[in-house]
Each structure stands twice: as C-alpha cells, then as structure tokens.
Length: 318
Ligand code: PAF
Image (cartoon, rainbow, N blue to C red; front, side):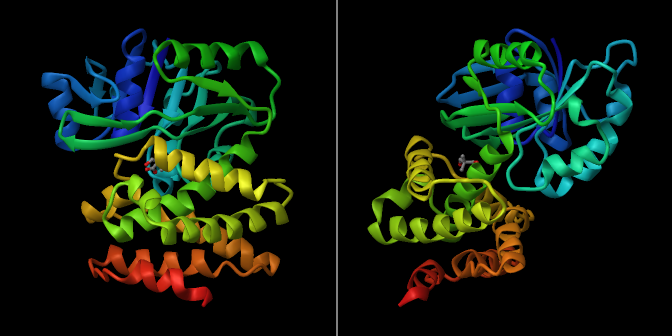
C-alpha cells in the first residue's frame, strides 16, 4: 500500500513508523523533525521499540502523479484540517481513501466539503504519543483504534484497511456508526486533555486524585447530554468508564493538549470543549465545566499559569 500521512506530529509519526514496516509510507510535515527523520530515520521508544525509515517530505508537490497514494491519513491539528485537505486534493486519485484520526469534532465535515463521502473513512484512536526530540517519539500508551465509512457499504475495502493497520501493530476494529465513536472520543478528550494541560501532569495523575475523577464524571456527563441531544445515544457511565480506562492505559503519556501548551502552540480546545459548549447552548444544555475549562485553557495558551485553576473549576458545583 502507498500511504501518505499529512501531519508529522507525535501520532502521525507513530502511525507512519508502524505502517512503514510493511508499506510505502510518506510523512508530510515541517521543520527539524522531518529533516532529522530524513537523515537518521524515526526512533520510537516506550510501548513500541522501532527504528523506522518512512519517506519524509515537506512539500506535497514532490509526490509523483504516477504513484498517487491509496490512503491519505490526516493527522494534523483540527484547526488545520481545511488547509491540509486542500493541499491533498492534487494527490487524491479515484481510488484514494482519506482517513482522519484527528481529535475533536468537525474534521469529517470539513473533509466532506472537498471529497465525496464514499472516499472518506472516519477514525478515532486512543494511542498516546509524545514527540521527545526531532526524529524521536515515545509511544506513551497502547489504545484502541476504530474506523468506519460515512455512507458507503464497501465492507471488503474497509476490512482490508483495518487488517493492514492491525498487521502493523495498530489494532483496529470497524464501526457501523463512526460518528458516535468520534463523539465518544471527543468527550474523552474533553476531560483528559484540559485537566492534564492545566495541571501540567501526565494522564495517570487524574486517577490518583478522587477529586479529579469526580471532575471527569461531571465533564463527561455534560458532553453526553449534549451528544444525546443530537441523537448519539451515548451511555453516561460507559463513557465515564471509557475515559478513566484511556487515562489508565495512557497513564504515562502527556496529552496532546499538555504538549501543545508546553510548546506554546495553539491547542484544540475550540474543537473539543468549545464545540460541546456551543452545541449545548444551541440545545439549551448548560455545560459549565466544559465552559470553565475552555476559558482556563485559553488563558493558559497565553502563557498565564494558575496552579489552582483545576481546584477552582472542581468547586463550581458547591
Ligand atoms: O489527545 C491525546 O493526548 C490522546 O487523544 C489521548 C488518548 C487522550 C492520550 O493522551
């Protein structure tokens, strides 16, 4: 398979490294990480030990029109989806499938504005990955990966894609309702990511403090109410258990939002808690914990650190 991965962040690199063991993988990214991988390969440590050699490029235009990718994986930040899919259009052939493994809501809809539904495969993954240095990432926790078509019943094709991922060490199952899976995963991220970004601690810290577990329950409950108001039929306790289970399985991982604030990058808060708050408002559902996290992460993005902010948010109910 000829696989192109748009976005060489921690997760894109992890998937690129794993898939490159058996397939022709091209990672598209920027800066020293791409340069280092070109010269020295990609080193992965942690849950996976691997020295991989995916092809690394900075410019999509260097891709030969005679060998268009079979699969394009979007692994860019949610706020870059529009730009990334536009850049990919020249290399999307009639048989190319576009997959998204991005955090947050709205990515699939943005891709749908440019590519027919039949070419899109939605996906979620709860693998934890951290970029340590240029050319080096840590696989911080093994998670589940789920993929699904939006409106196409090509079971043979999607099974083939799931098998390719699984054979490369990314155990992947298929969902008949990928929209629901994306909502569940977004709710998981709405709790783990801002809490860890504001605390400056890895995901496992949440499980060590009953007050934080309680806060997770409140954040998740709000997200489930909003999701169910648009017919997602999520089960509150199951979504809470899923969130705590992912925190456990990625206990040593620093969440992508924590990595973003530490690197003074923009976070995906608008596409995670921001969407939950906005859709809640539209449906008359108050999401005050999500709203407080949204505000607090915006402040943290500006470089202001309030060590007690999580304690203050946890007390919102009392
Ligand atoms: O965004 C992240 O960091 C990841 O989605 C997850 C699964 C929470 C692991 O840290």
